[in-house]
Length: 321
Image 1: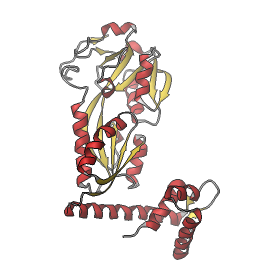
Image 2: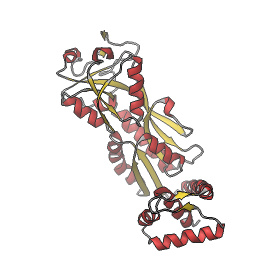
Image 3: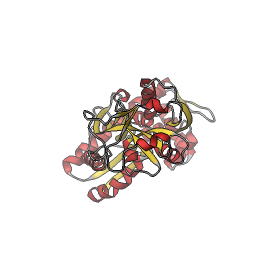
Image 4: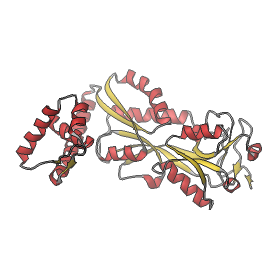
């Protein structure tokens, strides 16, 4: 099934520029333009509003793009099912993940996956949760590994891999640091209002972690003093370590017990989910299913939420008020 022309048009729509699209496709701009003009002549209408900096789809272009993506999705589903039946162990797999933990997961898992499926081409994509969800909706991504709340779910399919508690990170030298649990002991629980006047570093406004942090601050009736916004939880850890501020972080970032930070649980035990997501009604190939299982095993073998460190929610430590 030759879908080159479809892929060409979708790349123009993706880049909003024919020159950039041609560069990404490794063809000349004139060759790409000829393909577009040929299709527009066949359809009897233009597909794009042309300008030097922004090529926008026309009404006809929107229809073409929407259905073109569905054609490519059906093609991929068809090929994946046939590859699985024939056990060819070939194909393509696009994997999306968020900055921070995502690249650590991918670099740990990919070498083992590649040994099992050496002829499966894997395309890694690192973007924000919302960007990855859009790529799933556009059928331009097979699987996305996302960290989010239940209310952040879209109409796609979600597989919960691990449920993760959100912790308070405080410079170890802060006055409340003396109440932190000794290494190896269950974390102490602290009322967030004890730190309501302290500066905080938080994730940027477009992140799912920021939405969760806003909910936590609202629950404790705190209007936080925000010192800095970032797109990476590792930045929060670094800034807390350097005594600049406090932060709210997923427990994943506390599992290696970074120096100069005191971690606390909150009385409400806020949490989010680490999930594998894929487009509803999409066919998950054998390689895709294996990759998901490997990721689930990876994150469940290295959780911070283990009995030696965090007590069960029905048996919490005393709250430091």
